[in-house]
Image (tube, helix red, strand yellow):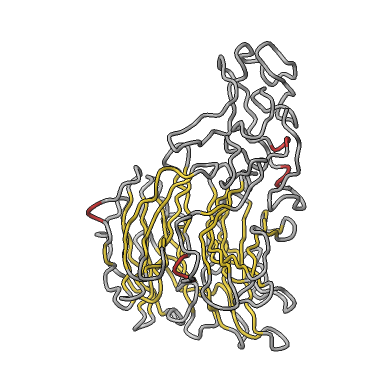
Length: 510
């Protein structure tokens, strides 16, 4: 019998529809057998979360509230002592049982992975071979996407691997299963000097495009990864046309079919879009100018943002004065539709310097934008502020969050958004002390535009530690995979940096 322990999910106990009360995957077996319900995959320990088939002699009877022959127990559904498959609830059996205070169950009781030995979600290291004595900041930011074309779905994480310094870098992609266990070994796409700013997008066929930039030559490149996790040799390490003046990093998105990639021409401060078909071919269109994109060359966390919506895209860029964010609707091949619309504006004393917040289409056709402002905010305070706006379409805001939060609000920067149905996960970095050295990664749940309680810590706060540049994605079950750059900063260089992650099962489940 498993001991009941405190539910340690970092976002638990929120007001309203709490994560604690999220539904378990109830299973009413109809087969003839099965016991523990843990099915090991070729990835070395990955398990299902659906349980077994209800014992050797209880076919079709599991869930009736009576312990029939072949059943360990039967509480007519999951309980503190019994799983939905009528086996005894036990941490490490591979069946997620929220009623037994399990925040996760990856089928083992190992330490150091996404789920602790007591079935609590834990922070784990994505790249254990990465650096621990130097910091390259934005270069290391990860990108997380769900591949729904494989079954069960997988989390694909693109990131920059470094060994000792920026001159020795690799662009890597690694797969994780639905319980956060790595699948196989990382796929290395490129090696070189000062690579960074990797971004990843996957279409409905399971094909991925990965983009990155070489900070030495200011070139942007991309590779196409097939659904079987092999690189398309004819579309590998391709130079983005006209990218010799690339400002920072390219970004990319899929609308379910093809892809659109965008970057800023640093010489002319113009936002450029290039689109691809479902096979990753770019013959449909070449580079197209969307409009001017001021501040692209000084933005610390990203030049712009793009996301798929309906049969096209929405692209975001800085206004010419640096004090507003503009949106532009595009067709599926990147052609401009209509005129630019205002997404957010800031006070005259502040400028947008980190437009990295994602904008994701919700089921109701709306989308949400998050971005950061910097500058004086009341009483001369020089801080960051986050802005969040919700739209039903261009120039049609609905349920808008304040364009600028109150002056008493703590610093918020480097925001990111994931949406599933009516639920939204919003993450940001918040200053604890000196914003350059001490911060904490926080997350907050929203439902239909309303906050579900206060923001919660994703990482454990520590002295002179910082979690920044978080990215996340959710599969259809509501499991959310969050990855970020963790800094163990000290008063003097060098600064340690590692890529860390946390997986929250069923966090965005209805």
